[in-house]
Length: 606
Image 1 (cartoon, helix red, strand yellow):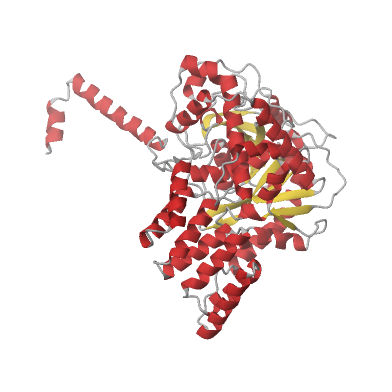
Image 2 (cartoon, rainbow, N blue to C red):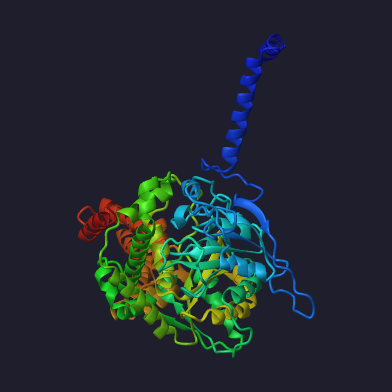
């Protein structure tokens, strides 16, 4: 008999022993629950993916008797982010101290009521980033919802629970709010649809606000038809509207920020509209350069960098204005409560909230002027038939509970994309487009303020063709064609490429270098030279990829490190760019270009 059993037999009648055992068992249960909620970053699948703070059921309004039509949302269920008032529940803003210091709601928010009136049932409130700050979806207070598509990666935020509830098929649709990307980002991380309507068209009367000038109600769905039906109810749209031609405009420079091959994004959309009626031939543009010429108030926010292209720099300036405006308005609305209550905050939220409270900026008129100019610039570009096509996000989702948190480069790249709709107030829809390296792919369609029905109708019309082309792209994608060819012929092509480069014929140079690579894919110079031409064209992602290939073939290729560093700086990957310039200095200690670039970037990120 073990010593433990002997001890139990001897002291079986001792009440203190049983109290001790009970405390121990309770401790085990508490520890298990803590781990279940993921407070220590453990990725454990839960029955509801940890999406909900409260589970309840608000029944839909009764179906009117015949001959009335069936309610449009009958049979559907939805959840709401913990910023919407629901009668008899405290609206918690994702933070226990906020919940503790506020009373239960006396009335249910009008948007929620409108959905109930049209036949949908509400089944609960969802987890969110504290106070609506954050883009990862992590909440140290209530636990982070698990991304149903990628359990080891964050779900995205701040409307994380709503996105997870839809992606995990717990509800048919869900409500969130979008300030700086708070529905678009989690939708792209979880591989579902999200709609950010034109600013101000959906009332937010009983919805907690992060930054009123940027906040909108948004919604998620797995099915474009449900996204469309919910939109018709919330936007109070007419069922019939004259069909308009559609003109898709691809922001080529913004797709350079994304690591997803163009064959899986731009080419998929282009092929999808080829055989659809009502679509003009697609247009391509450098969106950043257009913005630089049409939003003059942004010049005062530019961060000058010789290697940072003007277009990318202007979008980084736009995102910095967006964050500044968010912080200023949050401070105006919530500083008094933050200072008086001193709430306990998770590490992620603490940084953002404290930055907001410490913000001091007197010239709010300039921020609002940038917002107005941004909307006008989009209106002039898109007119009454244009739809801007951009990647929703630039990078795949970060790993769950990364100790270092997300990098400044990641934030810069994601906000450069999300700031376009946030600052213009235009409507945007995130559309899932298959997967790349197991991560969901998402593109966004943006159109002018007030054209919400036009955009919703476009998604419903376009998505079946997109699905078909996603399948074709997945089966046929060939990224590189490396074959053993005639060495003399490849050298001749390289020389032709060099001549075209010197003549500033960048596209022609790319074509020659590409043919040389096809004949001999083991020559680092061909890749490195093509990268130089790509840099001149502003194709930074292709330039980075070519330099990486050159370095794999020749680890002492200084030009490859310099060019990759330049490409990465233009893609806002500053830390990786520093490593490249530093490596170039190891190979050539006297290299002035590398030395100046490294110093400049270190100063920039400090």
